[in-house]
Length: 389
Ligand SMILES: Cc1cc2nc3c(=O)[nH]c(=O)nc-3n(C[C@H](O)[C@H](O)[C@H](O)COP(=O)(O)O)c2cc1C
Image (cartoon, rainbow, N blue to C red; front, side, top):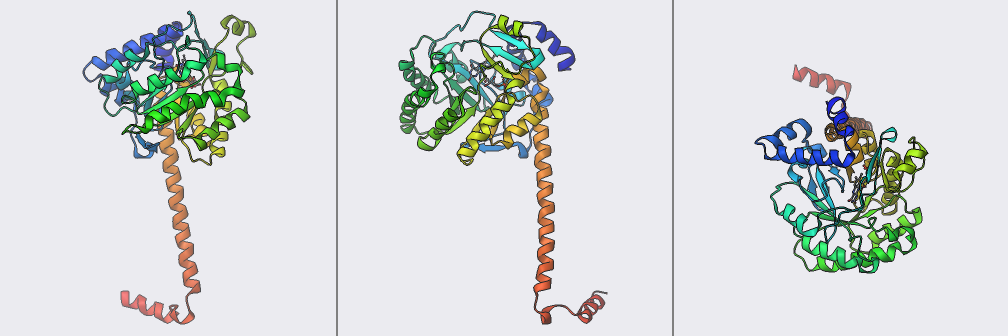
């Protein structure tokens, strides 16, 4: 139904208008009695094999909605009813900001991709708190935080700290989004110092709190591998809890969309299918470097259940969808969850078969190694048989 009816209608609209329509529809469904129940019935899958314990939080399934979709936390319960195991809201900045002029989001249908230069448009801290105060029982909410565009890089730590302090009690985990800083883009060699200046005040604040809120760091796929390694090492050296990899890319390599169209679209971060390979590669790199000891949320170009499998195999503990969801529609979470249940059941069956085989081998070996006089003789066996008879 999505690909034949809903998608053509939504894709006939500009991507931001389509997004607005979807958010309004979700909120209408949320106020209709039984609306969320219906969404859950159609789209959500619940199964013990899907559950994950990551950074001390129990997730009903590992498939989350990536940052940038519900930027202000307006439809948390409805999005959870669509089957997502968690929702990352934001990126939120201290003050509301309008972002870049429209049009600023573009579909690249030939590439199953999106280019966006929204520029972290959001309603700001106060509005987000108002949304998060509305009850959303059982919904796991991560909050992506960033600095205002007008804040100079040297003052960025104040923006992040302000958001962290004020949102601390409302979110289950936080993601520090450093990509929203355009000025920083060209200076990867300063990345580590810049990130530490932002993170350290957050850790100091957290030390004084009764409740623990994990802090994740979201990274760009455009960082050279050595920079990714240096940033990964922050996990080993500080109380940083994990990494979200990755954001959209600035690269335009290997696209089917014409050069002319790309030039017309202009700058922005590319997400979707062209990103899959790099995002999975980065997750594998981080996972290997830290020996799987820290949580990774894998995001970027997850368009099919197989992409999600590849991301989890590379070492992600959780995944997030954005562009894949836009192209595949609300059936995608269910499809991915079913594939993961199948995998878990197959793995369990294989393990059981292996255990049975191992038990048989052990039994045979014990029999063969038993002392000759304790082994049953043919006469014993026949006596036993007669006894049973
Ligand atoms: C329209 C749009 C807006 C986004 N806004 C944000 C944002 O505000 N903060 C953020 O951290 N990531 C944002 N992202 C990036 C996504 O969270 C995700 O990291 C990226 O799109 C790669 O995943 P995907 O290929 O599944 O879309 C945005 C992506 C899109 C397409």
